[in-house]
Length: 154
Image (tube, rainbow, N blue to C red; front, side, top):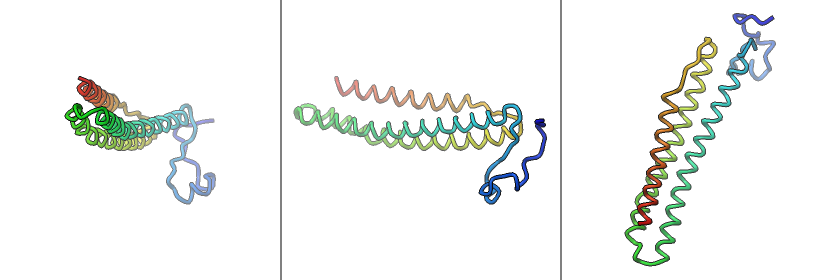
């Protein structure tokens, strides 16, 4: 029978690598313990995927604006001021996105360990502010990119 306050398995019951390194937290699978911890891992992996997408978007933005500028320059010299305006935004915006991707990865890592710690105490921290902040920053970047693209076309 599963008792929530039962002690963790002894070192002899753990896999050899886990018992040697003592880096793993082993909990008894009572009720939804395993499900909660696996959900926390899936959420961490979602943060990792999001950070990779954001960083890749930064690289793609630099490439997009560079290709756009090269295309405009090959069409004629009359687009030179627009080309310079696009190039002025390309690298800073791309670097910002790559840095924000690293920030999202750091937030996800910190959140994973705080959730793991809280779950062992029977608690769960809510992340409304974190999700709202990431959404706000990404929406702002999208608006800036569209503004740059629209200003280059006029």
